[in-house]
Length: 397
Image (cartoon, rainbow, N blue to C red; front, side):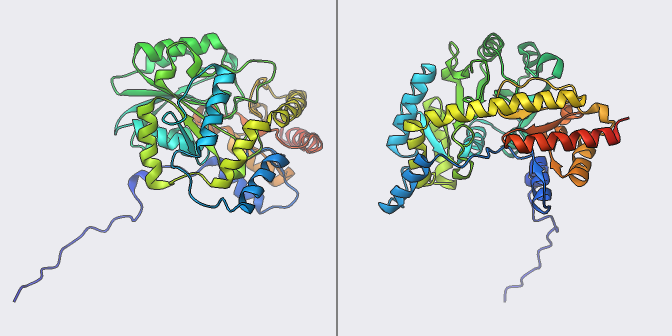
């Protein structure tokens, strides 16, 4: 008779250490708070207040009527990849093979996650400017890499400096993760500064993950596509999507364009996790590229009016406010209030029902700032400014 000896096991958390190490999104915390309150003006979540233009919605509806409800290729529909290839060539002079160098994803978020998991080995370091979008350091950590934050400051227009990047490079540095126009600051990097960063990347043989989801939302300045800089297409993964410029956040449709071997590696992970982006969303995205340009230009002009209003309003209140040249965020310095950015955001929400996001949600160097999304209507922005002024006057130190 066989005797079964009990095996003593150590009791441990049911959550992995890697997942446990990631902090919850500082943006979502406030989104959940305001969802439980009435009468709140939200300058919190980065989402257009427009519905997706009708021609994209109609195209998706018609695709459903036609019964297009099956999986597509893992890479995305050939039509969308071909149209995207034409789009990138027309806008930036970049040539991508739609069969092997473009992958359609579930928003830029998935594209970013895939890019990290396909290129980062445990212990690799990824350099990124800070403050930055909340998912950047998390995506690196979840890939067992190490995010290396390079602080940027208001006095330098929140632009990252090539010399600071070079000083942070170690034998473990694998890539630079860049996101311009920037979330949360609205900063746009001038071409000459991007060229300096590109030179560092070439000299140290680094990859560049360039998140250009806000590339169409620029005001009085030209967007420079990182992959279009000399010698950079071969080492850059261009991350983009349809959420912001085409008001298509809920469709969750994005893409990655880059070197064939990296796109192939990303596609393998995509096959085992997502399989393919939703078919009707790909149909809507195709229509956006073919006929959505007029809507983009109208929305950008409207965002620009809102941008001018909120920046002037925040400065009139007494804040120092950097002039954002891209995206749809203002990032005022709220130190005159005497509060931390977290306390400021919480009190403003509780006392005046205006939701903003504390700058620390985007990194420690965001302390003293809050992010205000101005993709809401002009009357709501005007009312929000009235409430913020009243709040600041009440608490001014």
